Every structure is written in C-alpha cells, then in structure tokens.
Image (cartoon, rainbow, N blue to C red; front, side, top):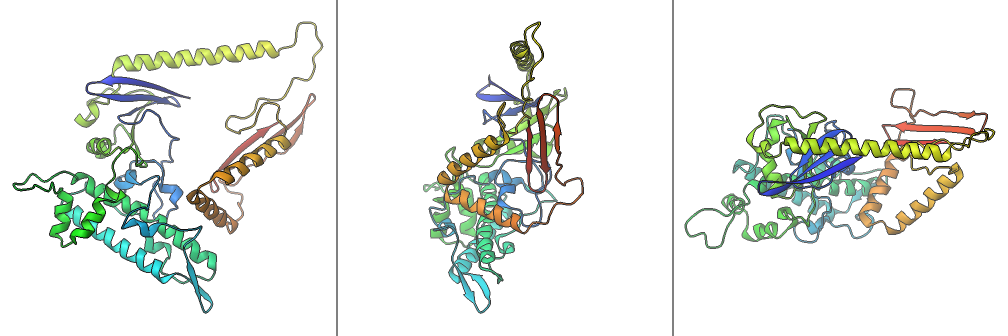
Length: 409
C-alpha cells in the first residue's frame, strides 16, 4: 500500500510517498510506479521493455531517465522511424531476407547523425558523465544491416533496431538539456541557444538544426512523458542532476528507506529531506492504516464464524493469494474464462506499438529453452484433498519469463 502526502515546502510542492514501508520524496511526481529491478541494464542488446520504464540510477547510463515513453515519430528527422503497418518492409534475395534498402539507409544515416550531435554537445560541455559511462547497444547492433535466414527474423531486427533509437534519442536529449539556454552574447537577437551554436560551430547545416529544434528531441514539456529515475538518498553522484530532471519534467524519486538517516546532505538534496513533522504525519497515517486493516479482518472473521451450538460445516474457500487476480470463491474454470475475456478486450483495443511489443515477446518465447531444475525454474505444487474442501495450490514463479501466479482453492 502506498501513502501519499503532498507538503508545501518553500516555493514548490514536494511529494512524500510511503511504499512498502520505505519513504520516498519526489519533486515532480505525486505517484510512484512499480519499483524497478536493481540489476544493471544488460550490455547485450537489451529489449525495449528493459529500458522504456523508470530505472535505478547508475553512473553508466545517466541518460536513461530521458527515454520517451510515447515517442511520436511525427516530424523530421524521426518520422523515418514510423512504421506504417505491423512491420517494416523486407525483401528476399536468393535464400536470405534483408530489411528494405531504403529503411537501412535511413536508419544508418539517422544513427550516425545522432551520434555526431551527442558527441559534439558532449565536447561543448553538455553533459555530466562518469568514468564508467557507456552507451546502450546501438541500432546497428540489432541487425538491420545483416542478412537473415527467415522473413520474421528480418522483420524483428528492423523493429528492434527502431526501438534501439530510443536510448540514443535520450542520450541526445540529455546532452542538449544543459545547453538548452539562450546564449548570453551581444547581438543575440535571434535567441540562439548554446546547443544550436555548438552545432553551428561544428558545421551542421542550419536547416538540420532547425529540424532538431522542432523535433521531439527537445520537447521537455509535461505532455511528452519520459521514463524517469529512482535513486537512493546517498547516491551523491546524481544529486546535482535533480534540478535538471525537475526542469525537464523527468520524474525522479528519492528513496530514504524505512528510517531516515540523520546526517548532512548535499545542498541539492536538503530541500527534499523529510522534515520531522512530515515523518510524524507519515507514521500516524501508517498506524491508522494498520489499525483499519486489522479491524476489517476482525469484522470479516466475526461475520463468517458459525453461531454457537451449530455443527461445524464447510469452512469456505481459502483466501486467494495476494496479486494472483483470483476472486474469493472463484473456480479455476471461471478464473481462466474471465482472463480469456479480458485478454480479448485488450487485443481489440491495443495500439500498433503495443501489438508489436506483444508479438515480439511471443516470438522470443517460442524458441526459449525449457526451464531446468535450477533455482530460477518454475515451482509447481500438486493437488491436496482436505476434509472440508479440495485445496488446489498452484504456484508458478519463473524469473526468466517474468511470470508469478498463485491460485488457491
């Protein structure tokens, strides 16, 4: 359960959120998403589902917070990433399949141009990077220039390559952010910004700079949601970036833990420190929530308990496992029938991008190896018959597939 408190501090509103016993502070988000995995992003062609979401801060990839959640691909130069249909066009040559040459040429040119832009702005002082900094796998590494044995392989590589432009776009936005201010120079009547001037000095065409200026690359508004970032309060390497995240409407959540440590913080973090009266209010709300939950369970027990003198009868169905989605007293047939109807309704309303992601996940699992006997393999429990009812306890938990489901009867 999450408890959300909005407190006015100095000149702005800061949100104090309690999630699973830990206290979080956010300068720009009143809610908190599902906590991400703390494992670092894979260095070997990660999937879009791995990076198009909030992640814990890591010095290797500070730009991942800027990844767009809903890329538009509506204006140059990113309109060439728009897919008109379920897949990009592919062609067959002899016994091999290739991504269409015009798509390859567009992807290759865009990748080179974005790398040049980011490198130029980095040298102009447009980003904070650490010694272990590295880019995420580039679109080329997803195979849009390679031959493929099967048609679906070429189509999949084109979509994966297109998705791989998102971290590259985020890297460019990150380098632009610090230089996204008007130059303080005499005669600057056209309000040229520092990043525009840096690109001009590097020989970039004025029309190309105008394209970038009108593209989603420099859209830092609230209407262009970005992934955001989680960080621990003692992750000092990112403390100076909090102001930038705020300015660019990039969600940021600072975790203080269940017990806020009392020591001196850096200046960027001091203004977000949970002050004593906030902590007292959070504690009072948590105690009240626990009291209400305990009272609710007690009432439910008294209502369900048989009256004195009555012979014991069927004790009823067990309580469903948390987060399983099962309803009290629901049979397994009804559970899966309801899930089937829900899936049908989702398929009928899913967008083209959601459909592409689903098909890619299905294709990836078709050739996946069968889970073995290791610690990450699924755990399955069999049927057990009790005196008053039949108990079915089926638990599937597989970290490889990301499945966790428990049904109880």
